[in-house]
Length: 490
Ligand SMILES: Cc1cc2nc3c(=O)[nH]c(=O)nc-3n(C[C@H](O)[C@H](O)[C@H](O)COP(=O)(O)OP(=O)(O)OC[C@H]3O[C@@H](n4cnc5c(N)ncnc54)[C@H](O)[C@@H]3O)c2cc1C
Image (cartoon, rainbow, N blue to C red; front, side):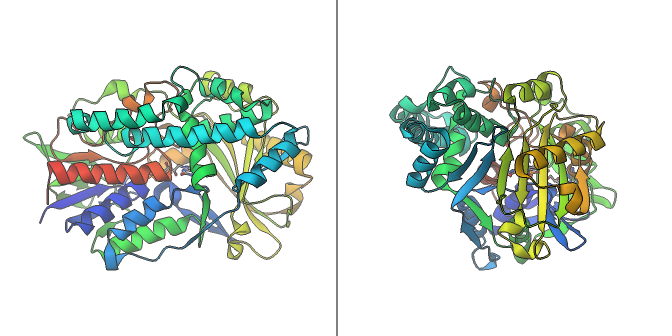
């Protein structure tokens, strides 16, 4: 039986382990941290439970598909569809609820902005068309394998793209494309989707216009038990399939000989394997675990996606005006991205995202209180300074825009900075989504899922193709597994 060593028990590593074990491979996962989950770990603090990383769950079919591969070994996973994706608050008191229902959304657009909703509905239809036209080419296959570019495959994808060509803005930035929504606040709202992969809407290509379709077209969801339930389902399924998982076991080296992997080295000893899959960030994988091999420098030097400063606050206040996902906008959104990507600092007045998980999982906070996840975007590699000042500014903004004095009702606090994210998950410079997608060529410049020079070495997760975020990491696990089946069959 072919053996696989997986480095890292983040969502990418766990999903690959489940797929490989479902095909009958002997799989061992090595995780540096004391627990599995990577960025999706959780924190229990004074009666509150917090998801440390992702709060937005989209495209659940990808998780179900991964679990279904395990058949009877699959752990249960339950979730519900939400009736709205987000509540938006502007400094001038404009408020807007992004309803999932199209008619309700249209009414809300007229009510909040006093404009004809038709251009926005058309914008969303273009997003759906663009998504369907490009998903096969960019998201569901490797971009770097000759098999992806056979004449038959290429013609099929080009055919799809041709059908959806009206929806494919090829030369504009996302911000320029979003001007067609007909209102500056709606343009800003759609610009925010660039942050779903840590990019800058004023530079990122308009091809990112496909992202809103995930929310508005396919829907937003809430896992029963919070976001960490995603990790629990994958972890339990992996164990049910007989996967061995070693936590507190960092991989120091990927052992190679004769142009092929031989296994991995950890402080506890060497482990032999036919195939090695790195679910750790690609930069430390090359720099630390493969010191004798030439690293793909151009790819490793790519501009990083954003990181974040996250305040996890237990708040003893019912906060009825806040829902599961809330955005308190910056006064000057463009200046915020100039600060993040050019000045490499956090804007004076940053956009503040508040997620209150206990809205859908009441057991995560005491009655009448909430488990607030409050995040501002920060540059990757940001050297933490002025955290107290940032906290004060964020609390003042929340007070100004919602009337809630968090400081008065604060029960407990935990904070994560870019440095913390880097040290806890091994993520290069603490970036949330690997390299940014600020250039039209970014998709092609992400690292491939199979190493060209070292036989049996594969890559998965947010720093490699097709990208970061839960859905893309799950798609990446599917692509990586398919490549493994082709090049290193069981
Ligand atoms: C604050 C925050 C908010 C986010 N919000 C969202 C969201 O709302 N929706 C969304 O879809 N995505 C979101 N993301 C992004 C998403 O969390 C990531 O893209 C995804 O979880 C990455 O998974 P991964 O498997 O690639 O990596 P990780 O989760 O980083 O896992 C990598 C694992 O490898 C381990 N590791 C590293 N080096 C070694 C080694 N040498 N040996 C052994 N193990 C090692 C690490 O300890 C870690 O457990 C967010 C991320 C953060 C941090």
